[in-house]
Amino acid sequence: METMKNNSDLTSLKAHLNQLSKEEIIDLIFEYVPADHLRSINNTRIDRKEALLVFEEVKNRLASWFDDEEFIREPYDLEGALPYQLDLLRGLELQILSQLPELIFIVMDKVCSALDKGYLYDNREDYCFQFPDEFIKLVSFVTNNLPDDQKEAFRIQMQSVLANGEYSTFDVFQDQIENLH
Image 1 (cartoon, rainbow, N blue to C red):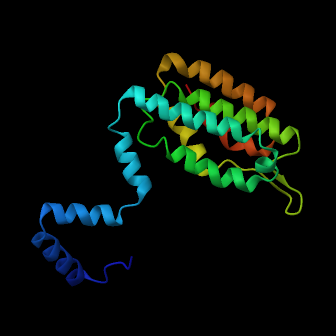
Image 2: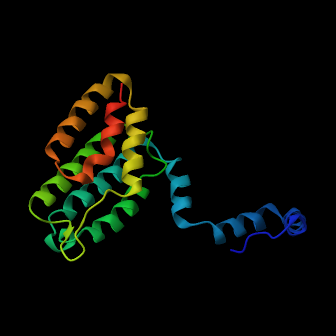
Image 3: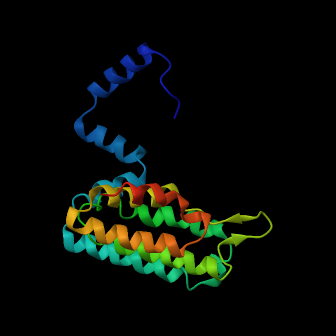
């Protein structure tokens, strides 16, 4: 969408929108808002039971990917697919906060295991899997929002994963864990 060029364009748009009914504005929003944004809005309105079902589906799907040797042969498929799966959880984070460490550790353990077996690496490009920004943000969210009584266990388990994951792929999480109190 082209950006508004000047204030008169913005003023014209505001005048037009003021003439529309509420239903017409809602129709416009539905026409132009990205589907993932609508899903995150809907997710904020579902109950905990439904949120846990979505979480379990995402967790199981992510775990199953690592059983598919073709999928994890090179890093690109996982790097592309992981953000989409995490986006399915957007808007549910606070409802499933206590379950998120489980998901994080499943993914990190599976990535470490796949790297140990020579997967998630592109020999032609000398490129190793890197956690997408969405996963890094999820770890940061959990790090910053876990209740105090769960933070120490999370920190200890994260340190263990980082100690076992001798790959540069995991370096991005070191600062987060060091700053976890």
